[in-house]
Length: 549
Image (cartoon, rainbow, N blue to C red; front, top):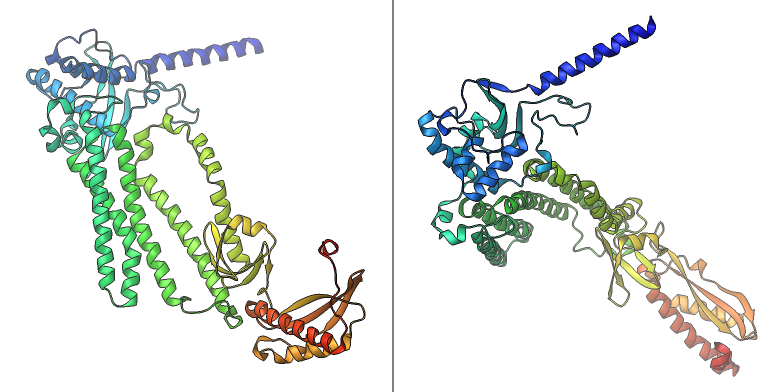
């Protein structure tokens, strides 16, 4: 009994599934007549599947057989007497628009009569369903976007065929007026308007370099104009505002020329347009965001400017901390503005629609490649934020990095700029600076103890040395010294050459401690030589170069 019930359930499910497929295969629009003014479609016209219909349009268009290509359009809106004449022209104009605006991803156009997408996810709304209408592309044709759609149509009991929908055919003329060849292109001689290679026409190999050259020339002119205006400006704030707007204006000028030229002078083919359109969006967004970022930086400089302040002095500890936090804020703002700009570009440039999904199927691999290539840059950016947040090194701090005594001048996105004691600059990648051990003489308490180390003979008069040390400390600038009670003379070791004597010099400012230590060392050597002459006994051990080594 149970086996019989299971058999009946299985049979019923199979029957329903078969009926569903059978019904699905019959999904189409019924119409009384289809393109009666064109006559019977020739055998070279294949309208059996969506892909075959689109391929037929491009194949016959490449041959110039527009009369046959008209059969892939639903011309029901035209009187039969006008279908043959206007259908060929409409087919030509539709192909021209598609050539100029898209790159066809054939793998995304279904090649089944029922248009069932076998690759669709089981959760998709159309999973396992035959379809009778497909939207292939969409163009911005204000105020309402225009879709390129193909329908499966059967005329009065005939075989269903796939044709470009009646609504799409109605939009061909507005689309051609918006995206078709410009008047300038129509003036060009026929040889230049012929196909060259890589899906481009000969005039495009001339027009694109000309457009780029014109854009660069305009950009250079804008730069010269901005520099002239800046030279004439007298107020400091005006110069800063002009400087902040300089680069955004140049980028905007170049982008405007390319945008206007590609829209009104040279309407390029899809292979070029698919790159130009996103680049135009990137250019305008970049110019706007750069203007915002530069303006914010100038505002921050005006509020908490440190250009006229020497941040290396010990009195500017609070300003050093503030300058480092402002630098961190700038990096956070720049990163946030970059992410916002990237989102705007991807949402407005319609990149995914233009490129097709299969081209973006490799986006994961491309992302990995770009991520690997940008690994160092991203690591440096994160390291710079880390330094700014944990305050391990602030702008103006005195540090010893790889035996270089430096001031931290700048903490940028990808590098730290250090000024050596002799005025030279060290440019260190932020990641390397953060991973290396370095001494920060200004961290926490600016006061520090400099130790002068000497190798002296064992029978040296230590009390005389202590008296000389006190005289040296007394001769130094009191403003540069810390608590003089920390000044000591101690013996820290001995060997066959003599004893190790350390002289402590307490310094108040790490930025001047090196100079103070040099003065103290010079004075101590002078006192030691004087003691040696007075006592007629040597103080420094005599050693040959081999022994010293």
